[in-house]
Length: 92
Image (tube, rainbow, N blue to C red; front, side):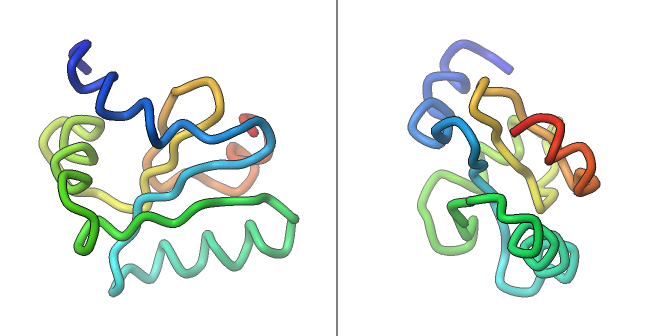
């Protein structure tokens, strides 16, 4: 990811103990991961890439040109695509 892309990601870096989750309205994997995070008490901010301007391009930059969701951003500024709940718990 370029420096410019990192700067565009900066507003989406969450506080400690939470994640930012890029989603779409039709994504079953997103719904499942949200359900699991709710059950584990992990806070998240959901950003629908179909509704928030510029975020589809940001997700593409993170994922090598693909608009793959769920894409999560962690408090350290790192990202993961379609992570398992165990990985989310480790990285929050």
